[in-house]
Length: 119
Image 1 (tube, helix red, strand yellow):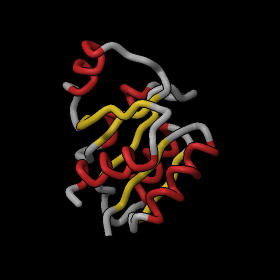
Image 2 (tube, rainbow, N blue to C red):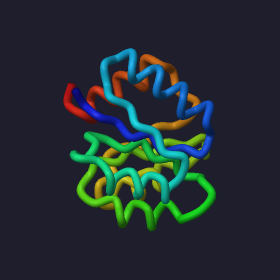
Image 3 (cartoon, rainbow, N blue to C red):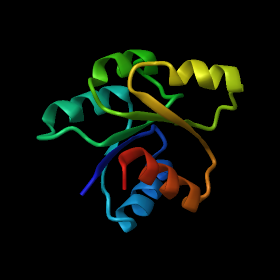
Image 4 (cartoon, one colour):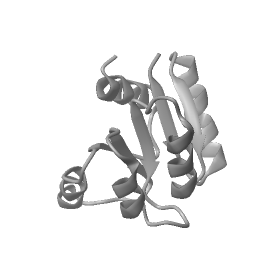
């Protein structure tokens, strides 16, 4: 079973994504911000197969969180509109494998996750 860690400060968004991914057979873990994400990573027996990381959250800057995640695939997701150039710059960062815009269609999210974790 593949494990996805969803990091978002919006509780409703976390829960929606968890329901979608659980229904698809993933083990879905939740974190409410970057510090919570890093703390959870320290307690897990095995690293998640993917981290969905919201870009805009209070607390520790996302760039700093990314630096401390280790060797785990990360897909940014955000409601912030970014240019194609900015998207490409983001994808050049260590571990970042994709950018998923919010809002998203359920089917699109599931397909993207399957592609990213190799299902």
